[in-house]
Length: 414
Image (cartoon, rainbow, N blue to C red):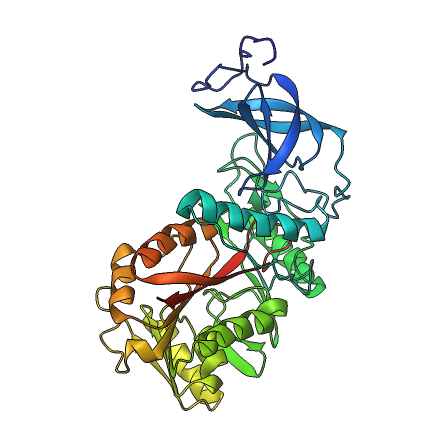
């Protein structure tokens, strides 16, 4: 390792001074990427993670944290750049914490996201299984249909900002005037909303910070989180509340939902259960291929919209029930062995209680959709122990230029 230096006098109070001093600069070669999108290298077997560094690069980095087993550092200089490094289009890239990969050629983003799913499967489940290449988003920029800029009340010496968390921080924000991940129409709205917010601060100062909403939909752009809006996926039109969850990359949703439908159908099931159905995305896009489909959801409002969406699209073989987390399959009348189950839980994954109920229901196949492959792999351990095996793993890149992805794991009952 490099020669030790004393921590600088402005080091944080809880800074661990070994093996590097605070803001000590080091040189290292980057070997791989972490699941958080950081470049990872080693010096004398000591791991150092560097934001915005790419595999194959030699970089100079400034250490800002030493943990028990690794250090974290900011990128100071790229000494030897990767052939896949490109010029990012956003002027606040590396400052704004929203994107991690704008400097990374898109085909390489897809390759690394695929690789990370495979590595997680091995590290967390101890299984080697093929992972299909991540399916690209039809749009690499301008794909987001929802943006939620944040602002804080100005503090002494710190002006008001409207934007997103600064990379590597939990409370400081970066001013974002335009975002390349949203459309021109949304950026025009962003400009107007920012001006209105600053004007209000001058006349009637905010007592606390807040979150703004800009959401593009079938009929335009809204800033009202309570407005009912519409989105079209394939032949199905969905209505939902603007501030509520709905997948926010419309360009990839037709191929995404078709894959889930096809894998559920290919299991030979007559019935489909969508266990986290929301306003009915998977339930209704799959209905045509099943005798009956049932969506289960714990949100009463989402169930009402799901029923409305079935009626508006004249889908008569779909039913929706308000589920109790303790007995989610009790209202399902058809047999598990003739059913396929789609689960798309929140980032925290499914509870062990839910997975136990799922295994007891005994569907012939489970299609597990996740925006967090780490919790997905954790849950897979329970399902694999409950009599299921992996048939196929397919990542989808719903979030280009970021470290995030959706991963679909198809399981069949042994």
